[in-house]
Length: 272
Length: 321
Image (spheres, rainbow over the protein chains, first blue to last red):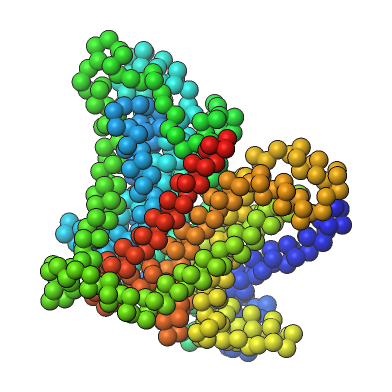
């Protein structure tokens, strides 16, 4: 078994290298001049320079795309957490007429992928005058990720002892007061995980943003990245620099919140 | 604070192991003196905004879309055309190609599940460096498909690093994204690269529920690893494996759009079409929303089959417990 472990470690280390290398390669390319890249794309950058990053940042409106993404993702996640924790508390911890049906309805929505409803959704959004607007995209993200949020919050609240709810109500709290003064604070650990996960989902989305935000100035960062290739097809280092800029926020989130992300991902699996 | 660190832990609570919603009786308003109308309605007020959003923007569009798929496009907008869209759909080589690619994904599914499963096994057995491996393997899972696709556009270029590596062993070069026979495998390979970390952490969470004494006993008996996997790990992790199978399949069916959009645009010659890409093209580029709706309905039926499979699996394992 001992030698076996070392034998397994070798291919696993190779795989780890293959996991990291694409990003290392891209970073290295982004730090090269165009001339240097054409001569040799693999060698470490001679004199690493940030001109490409500056070019990519300046010329394609990345700052604007970044603002769009930040605003939309922040609003969507805030709404998701409020609506998701309210519904999660009610459906996971309370029993009332129709609660089970409502919960199953929310779960059923988990199996309706965006691709299946995108055509009628685009029509509904257009009818509501929400196409090409930030509120429209926020609403679409909330609708997309709310079932998952409710599912996780409901299973979290299901483990809060019911005596806590009872005691708070005997103290004269209304049900909404119980939610606001007790369930919301108790739910913070779960809300952090679910919030980070939702932020990643929204931030990384491209299909919904492409569909609902047709005009160039409303692009999110990920849609902006897809337009980089056409713009810099003969200037790969600048293209790589743009990709890198778009990847950095997510990599930072990963470094700081890895534990929360993993908890959010696995929370669904242990409950089935 | 871990999710599982709640007053009653996820693992110790049997209710956590079923899909049933544990019911709190204490909040039944009727049992209280002076059950006011407002309090009776309070639970509904809590769920109302969420239910409204889900019904209006998820469930109602589903009905609308199915309905829409039986109407025409262009001049026939709003007119009932019966099954015409479905006839067009199943006569369109692009859509048939997309369905063929779905079949291919199903065939590749065992590989996409086995790789993270095997890696999780080694990490659980504490291979030297297992902590590092876990952190590194997971990181591509947080990257957007758009970023991943853009990076692999560079790596899989004809004069890119992958072909350079092949060249050192006198293979290739391969036109990864330009050869119709290769492109779909290249895209699926990138998808697996980007998502296997997700399945890996789910497997590891499953391992932590596995009774360690079983593993220890098998190892003390000197059982070789393949037999430990077959007789101890696979039966012990059956629920986790089923969960990973279903989520991986759903992921393959619904989250490859970004890669296709950036890496191949469905090409070369439509070789990398998947239903979701077909829907996008018909809706966005070809102005055939009704035809797109028909394709959506077909995709939904595929998803329903996957969903029913999961429910039956959950029922079965629920009974076994």
